[in-house]
Amino acid sequence: MKKSTIIIIVIVAVILLFIGSFVSRYNQMVKAKVEVENQWSQVENQYQRRFDLIPNLVETVKGYAAHESETLIAVTEARSKVGGVVNAGNVINDPQAFAKFQEMQAGLSGALQRLMVVVERYPDLKANQNFLALQSQLEGTENRISVARRDFNEASKRYNQMIVTFPNNILAGMFNLTKLEFFQATTGAEEAPKVQF
Image 1 (cartoon, rainbow, N blue to C red):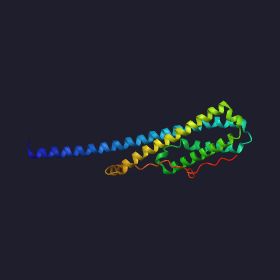
Image 2 (cartoon, rainbow, N blue to C red):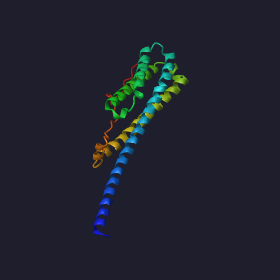
Image 3 (tube, one colour):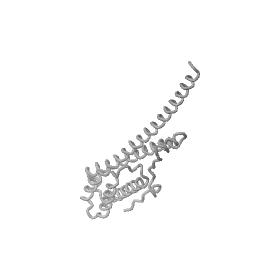
């Protein structure tokens, strides 16, 4: 073989290796983003489950606590606000929409906590099988939401770490792959709630 042919083969091999490395890194970043989106869909799924359970819970409590309308109205209003945000599109790629989503979910959680305090005042309601089943479903849903948020944060962390490390950061910049937000604890979450009767 001629020396010039060997040089051309070596150059082509180096270019192919570079392109292969480029494609591999890009595919890894895209797979990581798809994993984040999958985890986000699990978060939305659990929030939707809670959203669907609330009317049943409110109706059950209404029968026992008709004069506690302020709390019931607060839960219903919080649920309706969340309803507009739950399926508001691609929330994870918009930091303001993500913050609003998180704020609305925190408001709903707070309203549900107040509802549970109201329930403590009604021993008959606490013994009602329908209510106990709904409460159990809601507690399970809250646990699932917590796990889904944790899994989302983990997937976001892996993705964010991947796109900021060299040379991935160059590729991420070329394809406009940006860091994603994390779920944060709501303000005051570090303090235990006060229950008063």
